[in-house]
Image (cartoon, rainbow, N blue to C red; front, side, top):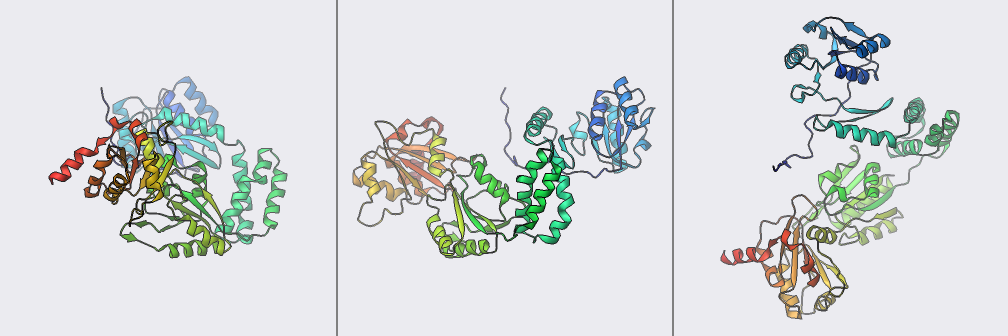
Length: 480
């Protein structure tokens, strides 16, 4: 049996994650057995008032109700049992009884969850990591309860048992911080240091007095915030190829200045309140000049912002990082480089082809191909003839001239070629062929994404069976 899983809207939730306010509110639980008890234990982690409707409770459930002092309706469920409830859980195990309880809840506007009946649920019960007042809720919209439990166990192991104490200490300091520490980036930086420095360490060691001393020391320090810029490689597009450092910086950034090719899935990893500036330059559509981008980076940093300049691929490979670094140096702005996976590597990984191969290709050349102009042959073209692998960025529009010049320089027309559109992404397309097939690329109007062309004898070692033949499209273009 073959299962087909649709990728449509694969990153969109059908249930909106939210926290219900249940302090002193009634939460009703309908059911007699183990599932009702499990929901009771879950709700008992809150300050809600629990009302059980159970005419024949199990011994364990009855003990739980008595020990917790919970309300107990000792008869079969009736619709008015949900009057005044904030939420309802239904765990009868009987389809007809479940449906009756759902109808009663909906008639009263009470959100309801039915055990093992996702089609009847208004909300889903998450797996909860409780560090009150901090809570982490993990849900799968009913698709994978065991998976959510596994994730909860992993997160439990990651988080300090004292995290709630740290949050309560922060809450106690919040009024004085709001009075003494300027809003915006300066205050965010203060809280970062509060939650990740000596204060947090003291709380972990159960030294609340020491934590208070450290917090007071933070308040006495100067609160001016120094702006800084990180030139970050976003990789070729797949969000799971982003580096851990890049991910962390996105979550800390006050402003994100990004290229057009950076997908929304990566941008959404940043803080929701971070300012976004789209400055992407694509062929025929430049939203900002490089000089304007340079001025924007300097201006944001001078205002004390932590700025992530997010570039597709690697910032040092055709990312014009050199010009931005020069502008930041001239303005006295601190910056760092965070490498990313460049598209040539992603394309090679997609095609499972070696970019260097012992005895075949010992060198690798990156080029855009746009320097194949005039009568002088670029040095990299001579390297290609001597056996180097050539990775051509933005190669579709210059495919014909690249092929013509390389063949004219002496590279055999039967040299292996790989072409990858949207390298690393779910919608990538891969082609294989020969150098003489390459000019057909320029006539293709069905490849709107970024195209990487890899040329050289090492390409023949790739998984060409995973790709479409270029020659087929070449013949189609000639016929047209």
